[in-house]
Length: 285
Image (cartoon, rainbow, N blue to C red; front, side, top):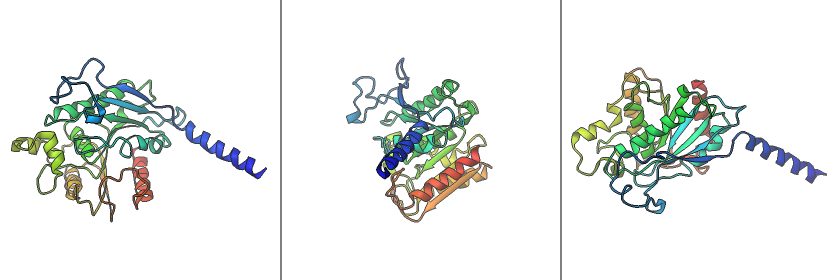
């Protein structure tokens, strides 16, 4: 009898968890052809194993009864050379869906020194979500963007290089690359996005702490103090620029953890990080 009750309890818990999230589905981002080229995606077949991605989104919707109208377009990291699609992308679905928030994970193209390529993919993902807002129980005014590492650079770029009609409603940045100043930047991300010999004009343009305006949306930044891959001044200087423009900003710097933890449970401050993010998301309601 005890075993039966335990089985039924486990079954009900599993059913409850599943009810908070609908089955995910994929969509091509540019069904009529991509608008620009990174030098390889037009002339060669798309091949995920070669990090030549066909741009697409995977949509994770919460149960309609739980939907808050909020949505997050997620940009995984990878130094603009590959994508960490799982722990910085798909694995976040349950966290957001349980809170009634839709998660749209973007598989964006690698730039190969053409920054317009991933940026256009990210902006198109936001547009597609808004276009389907009514069908997906989303409020088009509540669509934010999230990114980790180089994906954080992409998210902060979209947040600082958009107008009032296209800007995301908020930004969630995990250990983000923000600046292209050689003193603090992640050199691989810089080289892959704009090239090794980029003009200073491009360096400044994509150093997003220098591109903050009154149109930039509220932000939360979550990072580790001992991150040597993407040093903390990336987030700190961005935070200061946001505050100088009167933009709401929150930053959590955990004592350790290094770089690239995403939603992995082996991150020492995993529970604290989820609690901090949850509390911040509650302020957006």
